[in-house]
Length: 88
Image (cartoon, rainbow, N blue to C red):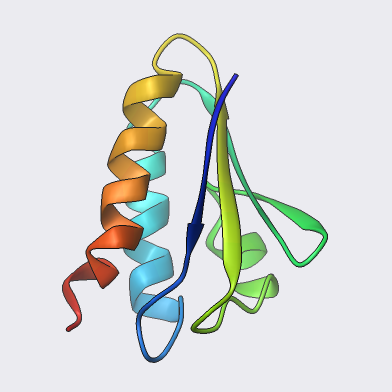
């Protein structure tokens, strides 16, 4: 199990477009990937569950991956969040 905690920094949070990019990226990996935030856990490969977390600017999230490519998955998804999904 690999995990990393980050803070959502984009002004508009993780809305539909960044959530879609996140899911597309997560889906490239074989590992089971989840996002934890606000006491809830969501499947990182499902846009509906990610949107249900209501991830606004300043929200602390933890990306967790478990499987053969878990480190690569957490690294790639962390880079997306840290780059603010290329929005700013």
